[in-house]
Structures are given as C-alpha cells and as structure tokens.
Image 1 (cartoon, rainbow, N blue to C red):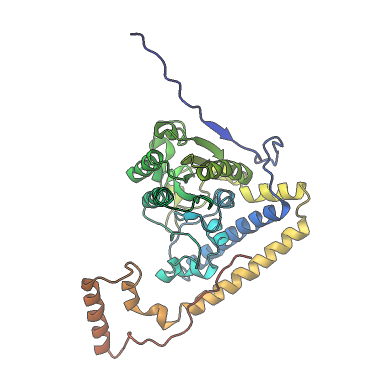
Image 2 (cartoon, rainbow, N blue to C red):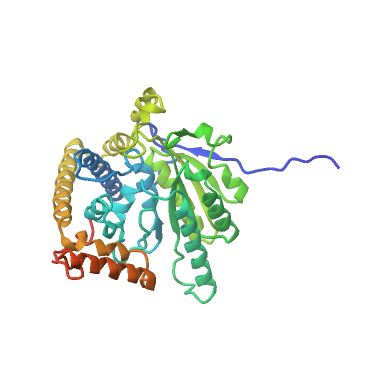
Length: 390
C-alpha cells in the first residue's frame, strides 16, 4: 500500500495593531469606546501597580513577587470576553485581569507580603487564587470545565448560557506534564476551556529554543485535536479577537482552544532574578519598543476615543488610587488579626483535620506560656474595599 499524507490543520498568526500603530482595519474588532477605555484603564492600572510594587520591594515594604509588566494586553484582551460567573483560573502574571475581575489592590499587596488572606477571591466572582506552582492550575481549569459539562448533562438548566473557563500559563509551563494532561483531558471531554499561553520566551533562564524543537506552542493544539492560534501578545486587539472566537466556541459546546500569545518578559522573572546573567539586554531594548500600552494609547487617540489630556488625567487618577490602596494595605499589615500565627492553619481546609487542629492547639498553648493569647487577638478591620473595579 502506498504512503498517503495526512492533512493537518495549519496554525495562523494574528496581529491587528502592530508596534508602529499600523492597523489592519479589515480585522479590527468592534469594541465600543467605553469598552476600549475600560480595557486601557486596567492595563494602565496593572502597569503602574506593578511599578509601585517593585519600588516597595526594593524598599523592604513588599515581598518577592513576579512582575506582570509587558503582559497586560494578554490578560486584559482575553478576560474582557468572559462574564462574572465564568471561571477565571490565573497563574501569576494576570494582574490586569485580576483587577478587572474585582480583586482589590489591597488584596494583591496582602498576598505578596505573605498574608494568605490576600488569596481570597472577591465575593461572588468565580476566580481561583493566584497559582505559583507551575502548570498545576491547568488541571484545575480542565476539571472545572469537565464538571460543568457533567452538570449540564445530568439535569442542568439548558436555557442558561453555558459557562466557560479561561486559564493562563507560561511557555515554561507548556513543557510540564500537567499542561499536556490538562489539554488532553479538556479535548477528550470537550471541556469549555480557553488555554491562554503567555509565551514570554524564557522559562526563568531557559530560552524557548532550549525547551522545544517545534516552531510554535500553538501547533501542539493539532496533537490534541483542538483549534490553536498564535497571536501578537502585545496587541490587545489581536488577543481580544482570538479569545472572543475561542470563548464563543466554548459556549457553543465546541470544546477548548489553545492560544499562544507571543510577548517578552521585559522585567526579571521575579524581583529576586537577574536576567542580565542569561540574556542579551539589546534584545530587551528591542522588545520595549513593542510595548502594548503606548501602542494601544496611540490607537485610542487615532480613533478619537481619548486625547492627551484625558490620558494624563487617567494617569493622575490611577496614581491617587494606588497611593490610597498602599496606605490602606500597610495599615492592615499592622492588624493582630493578620499577624496571628494561628491563622496559618486556616487557609487550606474548609474543615481543619484533627491532626492539624492538634498542632494548632499546641501552638496556641505555647504562646500562652509566653504571655500571648493568640486565640483572642485584638481585632482591627482587615477587610479591604469590596472591589477596585469602577
């Protein structure tokens, strides 16, 4: 028998607004001016928050954290397509999306200062906490999507709009077994999951060329039998359009999609990293010129959505918002309720197991012998504002 070729789907690359501000009008998505301003606002809020946290970390006022600067277009362009009751399963560079979903800035500051109270999602929002272990959140996302299919099949309300799951991971995470398992299960069980890969080209110090031989991450979708696309991750319009198509497919019962968003980590991996030891800074300078924020701001001006005066006013408004949140959070840090060491037992299990309760009691009794009763700390409010979302 002769050998016959197998026709495989081709992977496309999508860019709508390039780094020079040039727009492909034929591909431009229809987003109303209010929506465009909201997208830009949260991208800018995330960038300025990230920059302020870096200064705080260098001053000893914030713990080590992974910066999200340069990833705002991926987070915001995608998250803008899902609803409050859809599921958002982040990794750790989705600051713009978290703020848009309603996470207070104070919670972000709490979390990266080591207070697990900052990991608590806002009331009524279907978000999972920030996930630092690499790729484990993808299994959670696939599981949520599979569970939603089971719920719908076994008596769910068919008239209600189908929910979707949106999850995020890096190029390094794409090399983890958890990533492959999650994609495979989501594909086999037709789970409504949108997999957003932030390809910033470095898994800490390992460049993408040393992680894999394939040309794109998106082409891995072919192996799982699902749609895949590669987009300009610094083009918020391209990310928005690709994510919109993927979300629509998921809602229509057509299963998962893999979206590779090409960007660059212009910052260190975390505030404890020194990227000059493993990459060429000339490359970094080139990618800074492709930054999503000035690109999007120029687009808004060209469309007449915002002018320079409005952009400057938004900068001032955001600066005031961040300063207030920092002051509020640093006041919260002093609360004995947050400083209570017994709280370390309270953020994993809904019902604490007997062996942990025994350890908690032992620690409480130890502190009592030192003259401190942590079972009744002096309480101050540790509740952040309900939302930072306008």
